[in-house]
Image (cartoon, rainbow, N blue to C red; front, top):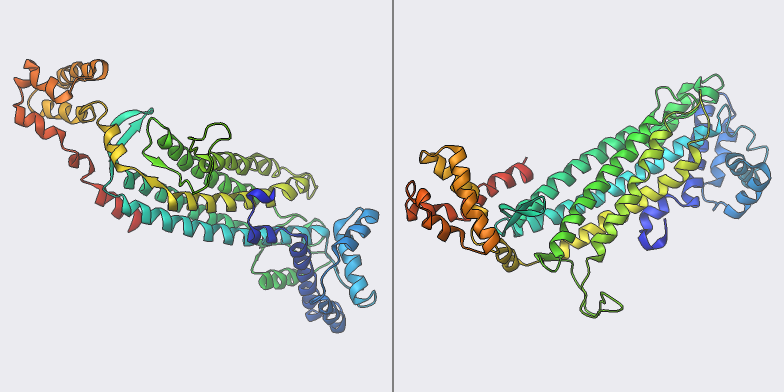
Length: 434
């Protein structure tokens, strides 16, 4: 991923240095386990650890790979250069390349998951704080983009919290599913390596042995992992899209923070554009871009092929780095989001009292009118508000069919905003105290 949308800690997980250090740990722990079983001499296993404090020469590994055309062999050759050919004689004993590659990849995904879950915790804390801040900030709810009934901005944020909390659960499940390792040898039969080696290495790395690895770890695990990232990205986009709509000039109920000295347009000095949430919309597309290739990686040939390899070398770093950046950016957007309660009320009152139409409808049915007649009476008065700019309450009071059923005072009772928000506390209790 390009540096513009990257954060150092996540990038470090996918660096060549980190990869080769993990490869080394896998080989060194496997050598220890082999020595415990008496398969290789103890001194050879101990010799491998001499490379623990050596910084691997990435350029040298690349140089060897240019000849061997095989990255794991290039690494093993470089390791032998460091510790000596005789000492390295039993390194990789009974193992195959996928044992190293797959176990490393899964460990990197686990480490990436830990960062993403930490990101999500920070986001949830910010959403919760802003939700309580605006629990009673009344605004109009919209369906199909059209004014529907009143809600509160806090309830909108409570929905975002609940959604992201579900995504946190998905990340935890995805992390658990991907946290497996395999040291099972060619075609996964353990013919040349004892299963105890796999158990030992996985324990040292904090992984679980893959039940059946068939030389590669089954890619349904990875498909589920990247699908979870894709759902999380889609939720980021939903929240970002909501903010973008609410920032439109003719709405302006919320606005991204606009820093001193910031410029919105090279041509129009007045512009304050929702560039961060637009950016999040685009980043979400990039994360989702990994989902279909991850699904297609499930169908590998027989016990192993490498059609998945080129895909994962891209989607592993790119999707986790991008999602990490997106979660941090969304956290900052919500933390600094400017909220305009006055504009929310102004927008709600754009069509005077029209948002109370359902309550009037229900009140008429309670007074004995059929639902069909109630709907007809309310709609004909509502359309005058919509088309002519009339006042809804005034029109109802002037409608003799309405007043035959309800007094002016009874009509007025149906125009209380508090009626629509009276269960905000119940919603908050469900979301934040469950």
